[in-house]
Length: 222
Ligand code: C5P
Image (cartoon, rainbow, N blue to C red; front, side):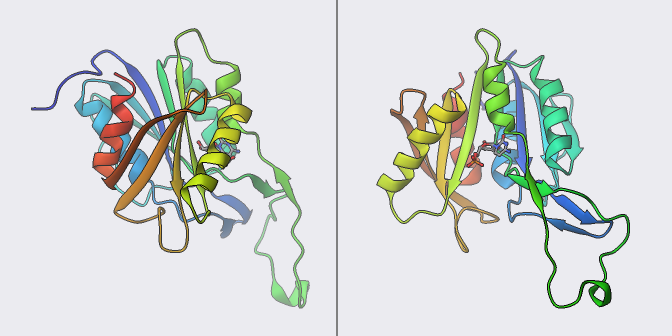
């Protein structure tokens, strides 16, 4: 039987990857499937938490239940609005979603046409808000903020160095680090993570299915 060691906790999890539209039919996106975030949300609900999953373009089906509320979003600004609203009532926020750092400055009202554009097409992108840093800055007493850092690095030391700098910059309580690449991390069945705390200390390490990795992350929240 699953221990109900998260009973009564209110947890918000973001999952998936945001999409930033260029025109009515095209977007800039990333390859996050939402599997790791969904595994965290489902695992937390099974352990007794009340969960709000903010899903950005999930490639996996999220079955809502009494303990698992699902809010679907697409763009970074939509995700920000949904997670900020849900965070107001939450004990824990887990930002597993892969959020676009930039969005097109303007969205074309109709399809961008190559006969009009010619041989090159220049896009101007503007920076999106850093949602994680915003949530950490606005955190209530006792609220726990968990971020993710997916990095294309060669080795563990580089990953840790980037992670420690990132958690200091963002002000989160925990940062889940994992390597990603053409064949790793995104849209795969398994994952390998290191979790650091705000002091930069390693507090957990796990490898395996995304469900088993989710369980180790949730252990930190009991
Ligand atoms: O800076 P970086 O994108 O690597 O940070 C990753 C973490 O920050 C993830 O938890 C992601 O959900 C979050 N993030 C965010 N807003 C952004 C970019 C990333 O909340 N604009």
